Length: 390
Image (tube, rainbow, N blue to C red):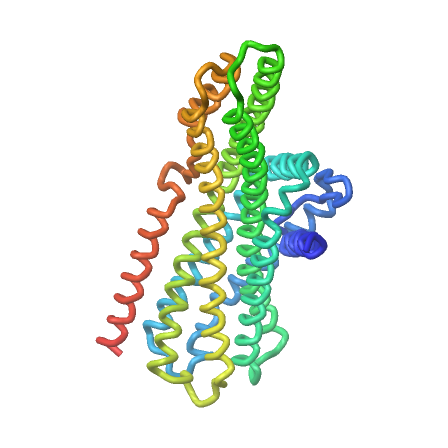
């Protein structure tokens, strides 16, 4: 499994370089990051080519009326709105990536150092990383198959370039969200290691029998030293999370908007397949099957992304609960050990882990429920409008 994780991470890096999202070079053996002219020119050229092809693609006849013989005006409007927002969101995400290039390099250095000091974090997040990589690969493969099936009689070099530009938008978004996913998973793995150590300290402290002997005092001092080191590691880790959230906040907003609109469009597309059949006699059944499979894996991808953040917050909350076990200690413990527990607990209370984006909203189960409710409402309104007017 460890080898598979390394393969996924190497492929993610190669994909990031290919799409220009990673606009600097990384030595995969030493972890050293470096800004080079080759990496800069390649990223700039890739992004200019993508957006030039998209502008050309936009000025031509709507792709909806070309692909779907019986597509109505609502399909065209929905498609154009989703495509327009996706282009704007990708553009803003890339602007953020270029303007904060050195910030992202510093983040990579921090995570590389975190892994070097704690290689065991991979054991706690390797399943998530592999699942995410496989899900993204399947989603992009389904998109390619469906598009080639629809365009099989019209495919030429010019159209192939425009299709490549559209797919590049999806690839850029997937690279960005995958990077954030891996970073969050690594932080979660580190939190689990800290919780494991904290659980051991709490258990040893609960088993102590207070006495005035030198062995008892020495044991308490040893536990206090370990607890203070653990508290320092947690503080540094939380600072790293806050830096990660700050660097990615523009990109996360863009990704959330894109995911929301894509989900809305996919629900409406599935409804349209059930209402209008194949949108014409020349559209194969394979496209409908790909659309259904795409919807399933897209839901799975959203689920993985969402619960990856939930598990991080749960790991932090578990640390808080473990510290609350200090109330069960026998009275008469060493004053320094008691103060170490109190200081650690108070620090977590004063500085709770909150993943906020521009102060607009905070990640959590409540906010996700609100987004899901909004998505369901807008999907039903869109379907109702189609039923009433078409």
